[in-house]
Image 1: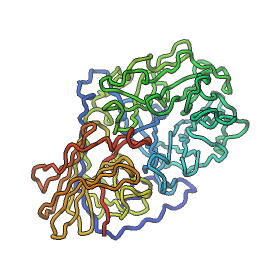
Image 2: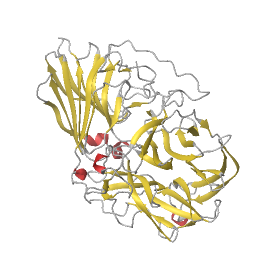
Image 3: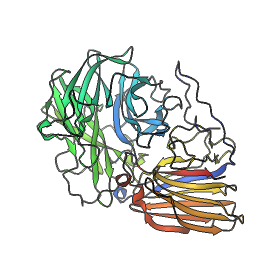
Image 4: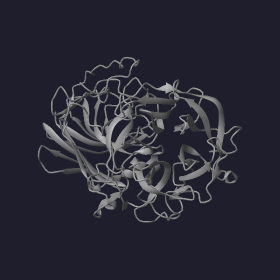
Length: 561
């Protein structure tokens, strides 16, 4: 069996407690033969010129990127909130071709997300490397506060969290100075009472690498933002880089929505004072027309890295919208070059749109068309591997071993749990990111036993989702249905039903086209039959639902006995 321990392929770190006990639910399994996802976005249609790459470099919900260069490669981490395994670790040689090698949160006993809303949990990780050790600092919002995990190998195992109880706020990061001293930065409330909603400060404190704890005086580096007289909001996501003797402090500002931006300050001393750049912000999309074609919005939360040729690059989050403000693919990871002028970095000129295609890093050896996480592609999982593909996630940490690749080789067996998609625990739903505005997701499965509803879900939060499912009718026939949830305290709707003669094998399909979504079925090898077309896909939009995640898709089964 796999499931709660599906991704815990590395041995636990020394001193880690035993894995949480798991049991197999008694519900009869639902057997899935394969799952396939295809994306067809217009933004990716144009041929890619030689020596160029596409944005975003990681399509779909990969928010709050942080990057480090180490051992001749680059490593990238992202927020996953209450999805598990958490904080994926990606590896690349050229900043364009990325492969996930592990997760910083990969054991069930590292963190507990039960009872948390989907957009709580782990926020904005920051990764650094120093003298053979990788460090990820992070905030477990509503379930512990700030913590640090470490590893010798970015693929894992990663340590248990070491908590930082004296540090409040969010978005911690580490800075290692030339003399070996380490410092912890983070966002927190200002020294006195906040003057307005969103008034925050960036703090700095020395950090002990032996105890993994901050020590000594804690000082404010930025109070409010780069123009405090304008009451700027949500200064956060701080990083320090030392370049030509300058300590360059880079921060997100304006909140992670349409007013998002990146600003920089610098000082000759790590403790400041820090002077803002006269040409801030160095990245934003807030001044562009809302009605522009193929808009990229929400740009900010950048982290900078130097390449082997001495040129700098920035990874940052942004969103690809439709109908002006909606986006189902969440906050994605983009890449742009950084230019330096008079010791100041800049990512994008004012009023310039984030480009979808641009020249690649000089050392990129492989064609960018082969990059696995961007462009239009088809991804298929035949469920014939011994463990789940890394693209799959659980909603919160599984407490039961309900996902099984061993008992029916070549098929995924889901042992249905009674929890619905609205649970604050772990439903028996395997989640894969929606990475395109226009997509199809399909699967083949055996008809479930009596008392079981099974199929696939399109999921944005516990209160916003679609379920294309089937169950046994009283006659032994199959009833196909589409359920929809559209908000807190609103009843789940059944939008369509269809009874078909009992079939051993079924295929199901969900097709999305920006703000519209459709649902189809087929018996055996028969043709697709539409069960529901032209339904409202803005139900799956982050703009409509709130929070910080994008939509996910995948197999879902529910014990209704």
